[in-house]
Image (cartoon, rainbow, N blue to C red):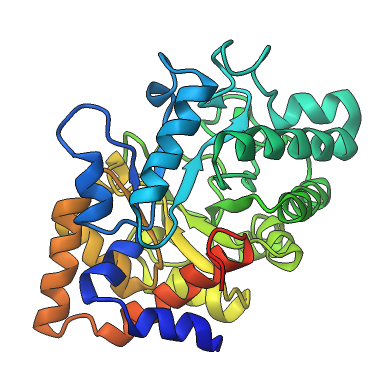
Amino acid sequence: MNEKIKNIISGMTLREKVGQMFIARYPTDGKYNREEAVEKYHLGGFTWYAENFKDETPESIRADVNAQQAKSKIPLFMAVDEEGGRVCRISCYPQFRYEAFKSPSALYAEGGIERCVADTKEKAEFLLDLGFNLNFAPVCDMTYSPENYIHHRTLGQDVETTCKYVSAVVKQMNESRLGCSIKHFPGYGDNVDTHQFIAHDDRSLDDFMKADIFPFRAGIEAGAGIIMVAHNIVKGIDPDTPESLSPEAHRLIREELGFGGVIMTDSLDMGGITRFVGEKSAAVMAVTSGNDMLCCTSYPEQIEAIIEAINSGEITEERIDESVYRILKLKAALGIINL
């Protein structure tokens, strides 16, 4: 283990360590205070959405990002979903870019994987210039019907081509020192949108191991720092629990795939979770199942739930330290913190 990171952790309070495990929706409506988010809750980062950019300029966003970073004892992940195509949080606004970034499938149609890599390099420069250090991409899901929820966000190609795409994009993002998150483990397939619904996937583990898992393996081998886990309930892995809250899904990631980086939930405020369990219980389950970072909006309530679980003995502080170590190690690798 890196002694410098261990020394940082040993000097952190319990609340600082728990806060580091949260990457929260950037506050806009006044319910959650930005200054409190950093100074009271010690968040590990923010996820910015399209609403945060609508009435802003590149200059105002840079100033806002820098102001939040200046308040934080440990530099923050500043994250965004800038996949391209239908999921563009920043480039959809003309004051930021002359045109929105294109979807992976459109880029592939234009010039194959080489075109996707060139776009990834340009996107990294664009995001880093604004102060963002983490992009929730690339999408590793595969599905072949345009009728399926995730289809428009995928490459739209076969397993072999998708693996080559994921590997190339992850390598370019690492070269650019922009954090990446391969998602949505173990693969959406034909499932419904978990932003709204609980999704049940009847496929066996063998079905996944023969196809959907391969792009995630490719991303891991290419050096992806984060795996984002979906909320689908997969019969062949854990028939009773969303993958994001399932110890068995996390065992698969750690032991079968050999991933040693940061495991992150998809947003705990999505319907696939809130219809399954309450937000406080979801946060505790997310930690006990093996996640290192929790994406959410309701971070004050969820942080308190984890603190209570530690005080009661349900979660150990050593378990928290393991996650914080992985988080800080990734931040160091990306140059977000200097050791």
